[in-house]
Image (cartoon, rainbow, N blue to C red):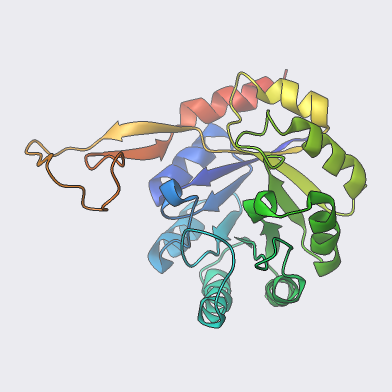
Length: 249
């Protein structure tokens, strides 16, 4: 089976590690602790220049929910244009209405814009926050989007495997279903066998200690307790290799 392994990365260095580990595609984000937001223009430019595998850019103007203002929607459209300008192969986004349904009009507009720019499209885990996954599936298919990233509306994909399996069946090849969240070398083989998915979304990250010798532990610069000030998460090429190895057995 020809599996596609997309690695979610929060930096250019992580993107390079993902490729080294055997990723077939990279999703480039910022602020992974918020679920991922749009990365900087420089990060997009350098990733696209340095990597050989396709780079998909997260288009999400902020953390939080997926109900966007008119201004935020304009930002998303402009970020898609910039992603294409710097060499991205695709973009990743998701928009919901206040009632938990997929915003078909706005999603369709972004899909059309991306297609005109010859960019691939993924509807991200906003899908998992939708009210009715079967209805959301059909709505997203109607927009022409190429792929849905989902954990099966659970915190981890292994917990949502029943829904993921059902989505693969219901999609009937009309859209790709990519499973993500909590997938690692110990569960990936069982998950793909059970659900029938051929696209997997992983992070493979590890905690990297910073180089500061002086550390002021009284302050949280981001204002969020529990977010480490002197450590960063980085994709591990070795971890990605172990996941790839499990899929080649």
